[in-house]
Image (cartoon, rainbow, N blue to C red; front, top):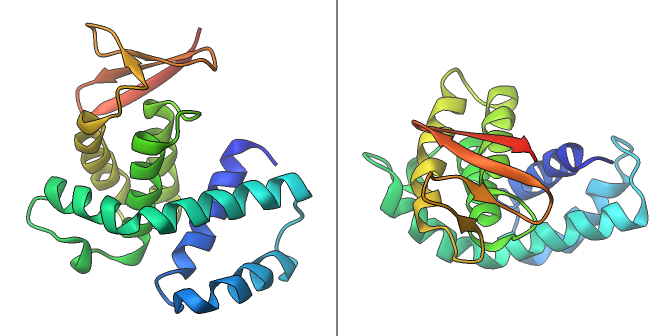
Length: 167
């Protein structure tokens, strides 16, 4: 699977955490992979499982950060699709050095357009743009607001939108 497809599977699995007791998540993982909806390699399965587990472990911290950035909202009031995408995007921006900030934002926006209501993409974009201001120092940015990563791409802020280009 490509990274985009893996991210969508992580979103779907992470979405389940809102409806299941944490003690049931091992069973949910097994059901998720055995449902027949997708074919994954062992490597992809490990990646999806590890990333989802890492995000779930950080949910209290991620939710505190989101509460700081949400204007007129709290994480407890957000629709589940938006909350799940914001958690995934925030995790990738702040804790996953393999994902450029612009890619994390753009991919969360695209998933929002696919799975959310009208306006979800714009909402996700605005909140994650705010979160990106808390970006870890491990992701370099230059004076123009462009962030470079080891994968050979550059993320550049254009207003409230991030654009990522391969370099």
